[in-house]
Image (cartoon, helix red, strand yellow):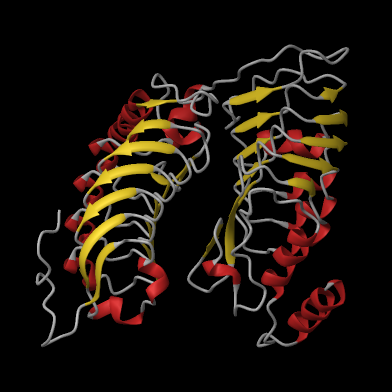
Length: 414
C-alpha cells in the first residue's frame, strides 16, 4: 500500500493525468491502522473508483476529498503521515475518540485546511511546528489530549499573520508562556492555553474592535444562529456536544459541529452519533446555504419537518438510525442538489413520495428498515436504484410496473 501511494505521488508530479486512486489509498491505509468497533468505516471500499461515496467523506466537484468527519465514532489507533497527501482537504474532524500517538508533521502539508479538530483523544508528543504552514486555518482545537512541550511560535504566528480564529490547547501537559498581544490587527477571537501547566498564563480572551468587520451579514448570521439554537432547545444533550452553542455570540460559526462559508453562513451541521434525543425543528429550513445535514445515529423522534424542503443547497441529508416517525415529506423533492438521502433505520410510514423521482442529482437513496407501504416508484432517478435501497419494509408491494401496477394501486397505505 505504501509503495503504491509513493508511486502515485511521484508520477502525479510528472504526468497530470495519472490514473491513480491516491486519496482512496491514503484513507484505506489509515483504516488498516485503526480499530473500528462500531464499523463506521465499513463503507470504505478500496475497490471503488474513488472514496467520494464513502460515509464520513466529502468531495469537491473534481472528486477530491475536502472533508473527513469522524467525530465521536469510537475509533482507536494513530493518525498516519499519509494524511498529508490529501491536498484539497479543508476539514479534518477526528475528535472525541481514542486516537493515540503523535500528530504527524505531514499535516503541515494540508495548506487548504480550514479546521483541524483533534480534541478529546489520547494524542501525545509535541504540537508540530509544521502546523504553522496552515495559513488558511481558522480553527485549531487540540484540547483534551496529552500533548507536551510548548506551543510553537509558528502556530502563534497564525494568529497575527494568518486567519486563525480559535486556538484551544487546554487540558494537555503543555509548558511555556503565552503573552497577551493587544495589536489591533489581530483577527483571532479566542486563544485558550493550559492553565494547569507550570509557568503558563491563564486562559485569556482577545477581542478586537474590527473583528466585527469579518461578519458580512449580522441579520443572516443571527437568523441562522436562532435556527440552530431552536434545535438545541428541542433536544436533550447528555454528552454536552452542544455546550458551545452560545446564542449571545454574533454568529454560530465558532460553535462546535457547525461549518460556515466565507460569508459566515452555515453550510454543514455535523451531529452524527452525538447521543441527542428529541425532535427536529422547522427552523432548520431557514439555513439557506446548508449543504450537509448530518444527524444520524441519535435518538431523534417525531416527523421530518416539511420545511427541510427549503434547503435548496442541500447535498446530503443523513437522518438514518434514529426513531423518526410519520411520512417522508414530498417537499424533499425540491432539493435539486441532493445527492445522498439516507433515512434508513427509522419508523417512517406511508408511501415513498413519487415526487422524489425528480431528484436528478440523487446518487444514493436508502429508506430500508422502516414501515413504508405502497409500491416503489421506478421512474426518473429511481430507475437506477437497486432493491437494497428499500429492504425490510414489510408493507411495500414491490416496484411499480408502468401499465400494470399503478403507484397508488395498493389498498390501505398510511
